[in-house]
Length: 322
Image (cartoon, rainbow, N blue to C red; front, side, top):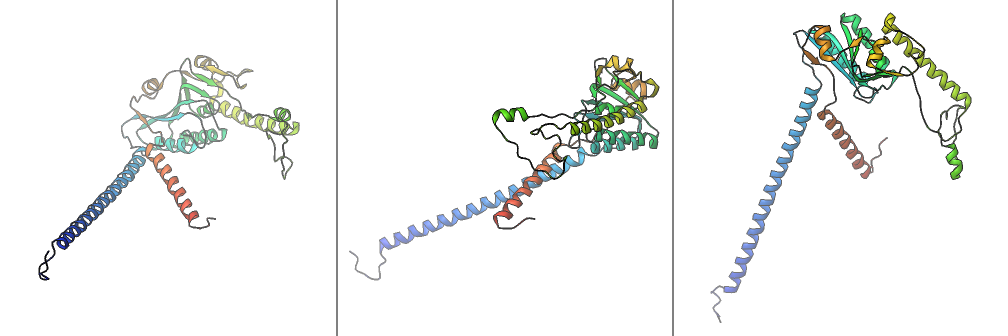
């Protein structure tokens, strides 16, 4: 036993050494953790910067068409449903048409069509714009049909100077429709009562859970007839004396490409390359179609996600959004 007060205790020194080592380990661990956190923060910042840069690049490159000075055939795609929220919307197609017509190197504009139809309003806007741009720039417009050019798609094609089809293309369907369902009989069988309150005698027109009103049905039929008449006038104006009209021409029937040529709904058989080479006399083809690219879709989705996150955060904080 060591009774000398001046002699340090061995056990006390050991305890202090253990404490010092433990503290050092904690300090170094904290430093390493902070360094890792800083590296991860820097990495995420660089990653987000790369994402935003990629989105910006996709948006820029996907929505610009370089001017081509050499003679060429300009092409604008009209594919899929013709609707305000579709790729073949009037907004997208009109922008594409303007770019094509304004390019001095474009010898003519080709509408490359593969569509079952859609909105008569969107088709009417495109048809009017084609007519305006043809007169403004004094350039020919040709429609080239791939598989289908029906209903609203043919409404657009009628504005072209000439229409070319494949012998097996489906062309026509010059008519107007409005469809829906009626569930009144099923509701009676299931014992379901429809409780509908309206202000306005015709506010519930075409409600699928109410019996069909004959006066309202007649009104809708008259309206569809007027739109059909507008469609017919556009076709007659565009096709002129080439149209060999008969009782089925405007009945809503569709024909194959060869039949369409025989009926004057189309001018000949030919694809895009044929029209560019033999009709336009400019074999080089330049696509002016404005498409919503991957970057733009990502940007929209990211914007929607950020907006939703801000709304949820504000609501959680008790903020009232009005």
